Amino acid sequence: MGNGGDARRQMGLPGGGLMYVITPQAILDFEEGTKRMRLKHVIPPATLEEIKGNTGFELVIPDYLEELPEPTADEIEVLRNRVDRKGLLRREGL
Image (cartoon, rainbow, N blue to C red):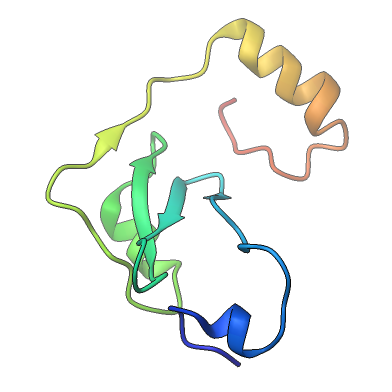
């Protein structure tokens, strides 16, 4: 298994790999050079400590973290009725 950087190329894998990882608690991306996973946005009501506790490795945490606004009613409708019809990604309270 690779360790960031140019690991995909070394393993002969095509393409550039993932750009973002989106979870119910956070949006993450990857540092340009090292390809280490970096926390980009916290999704309320999650906290930084919860996100760290749910991650099995050390994240890159920037000095400034932007908290995303609560989803609008229209966004929730799209998520529930088009994206996640079975409710697999649904959190309590949404």
